Amino acid sequence: MAKLTGVGVALITPFTKDSSQVDYESFKKLIDNLNPYVDYFVVNGTTAESPTLSQQEKQDILYFVQENNVDKKPIVFGLGGYNTKGIISIFNEMDLSGVDAILSVSPQYVRPSQAGIIEHFNVLADAFTKPIILYNVPSRTGSNMSSETTITLSQHHNIIGIKEASGDIPQCMEIAAQKSDDFLLISGDDSITIPLISVGGVGVISVIANGLAQPFYKAVHQALEGDFKAARETYFPIMKLNQLLFEEGNPSGIKAVCELKKLGNATVRLPLVKASEPLTEKLKKQLGLI
Image (cartoon, rainbow, N blue to C red; front, side, top):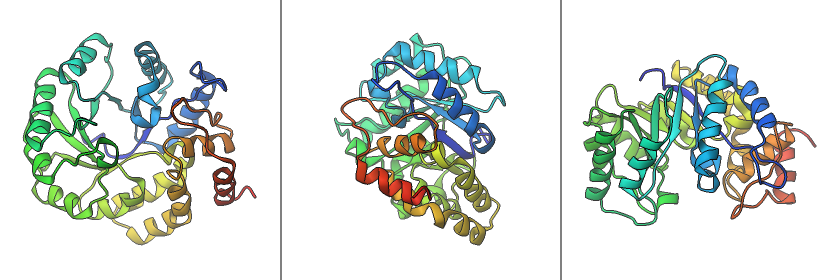
């Protein structure tokens, strides 16, 4: 799974202005803009507003990305939750042919013990015919996957990596130090990608890449090549923008950026709302539009 290194973009889902439909015209424009500057696509992650998408929309979006993936880059599909058997049922019902791996978030809301998290992912890994990338994002799930849990799960032959969005560098370093050689440590937080690469990370599943693919791709690959001075110089000018993206929730911020860059509109589905005018003005300033 070395192909799942570098920049994976967590694709947004462009909607029509009334949010009732997927805006496929804008979606194609977005994918075409991203193609030269990403290494793989992540479909149906939380940045895609997946909880608001119907099962049919998720399948149609996957087909659309596959059809417009002109360079045949790898595709990762998001499929997780806290109903273990239900996730397996969805996996078996969907057409996931052509998908390279499944990104599966640690069970949210119910806050299982570490033993429960381990059992949940072992059951999924045994049932899935696609390899799994774990996803640890405590700020959303309400529980952290410990480094010990990740290291234990890394021993399963069908679990190939983790998207680590805990923001805990020491935890990431423990994983890097004890994981198997072929287990992928992937940043789930754009802002710490460069330091994470310095301790063994292989890249990022990125939000900011939707709107600023070229400079972020350049910074990540400079870091992967070991040129951290150049990576810092490339990343620092967009650092403030990256911080602003999450000020009012994800993907409201990045969708506002995409609208400003004429890659769709800023519409999101409830319970999210569009980025406020004050935030949009700050984003404009960081983009050099005012």
